Image (tube, rainbow, N blue to C red; front, side, top):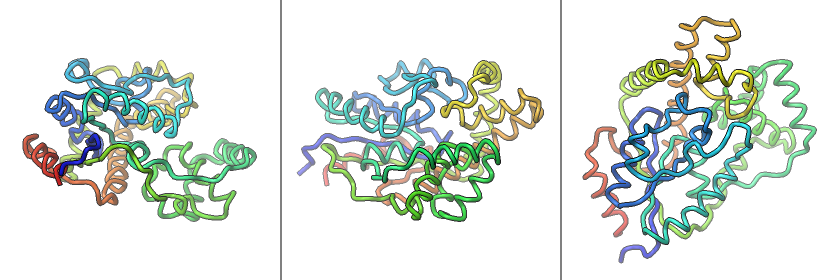
Length: 305
């Protein structure tokens, strides 16, 4: 018998693979709405550099958690889990199917499985780490994390100081690696989940990334980033596409070098995304150009089993 629980269909995969396009096709097929689990598309000031769906795409299906916050607001993955679960309750009252899409694996997992439970940390440890970050630079924290928690180092965005500080404060306060607190028992959710992953040859992904960065530049990413320069310390702006341009604006690198760095760091980010998702055995992978009818057939059969 088919599950009587409502169904959340998640679309995941590396950046620039085509997740937005597929999520819209699925939303139309089920006459339902889309939850974005892209942790940087939440912020209204960061439209171009986070590849927010176009006006046409946003109008093609109702979207949630797109440009709904400001970089001046603190918004954690725990906040997102709470808000997304609450929204899903409302969506499932109207429709037994909802779509969630995004490349932020931690945010997808938070909704599907619940967050891991971490011990409380002394504020002094966090202050000390932030002080070291300012004095010694991010490389010092990267080296420490690689030494004390190689497993988490391999999958975290090592250019995100917020994530590094978080992992190291747990490690220093407990003497255990951050990764040892991950993968607890899943939360019991009031919905079933099917996770669709999109994949492609590495060369194609890299080509699409390069094309996307060039498109962002043409659409005004330099002007957008320059307007945010006074606020570069905000956590939301510790993001590929902005960090590199801040370096250019401050005279540390040329514009051409900044654009090249954005492409390189986005490729690295895509590799880390793949590393994260490939460990999830619940994901059913499809090639990026698979016809949506084939994916819909899989969903129908999976949901009926």
